[in-house]
Image 1 (tube, rainbow, N blue to C red):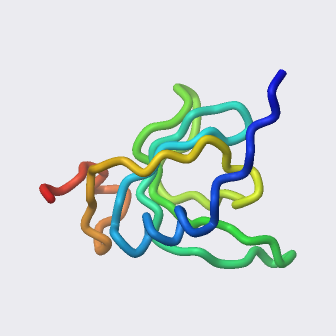
Image 2: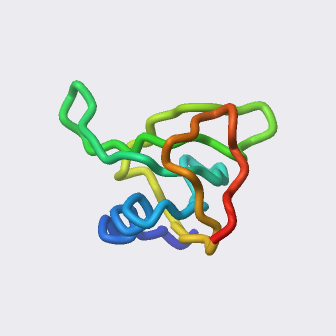
Length: 95
């Protein structure tokens, strides 16, 4: 099995700054999220705070933290979102 590379940190920062929806693989599952912030966990690991729009059928919805080092195959989508909206408004806004 081919090992996937970690997503470039610059791509995550760009998506946050530009309010772009992203899609990525995380622990073997596919997620589509609105990334809103980079931060640190209590243990010091870099995390991405995001609002999950699509995930595994039995998985996460709403606000979630993702360890940056576990994010793979990141794709910045053309969709934009309103940074002031939370889980109650998971649909992208017009560009």
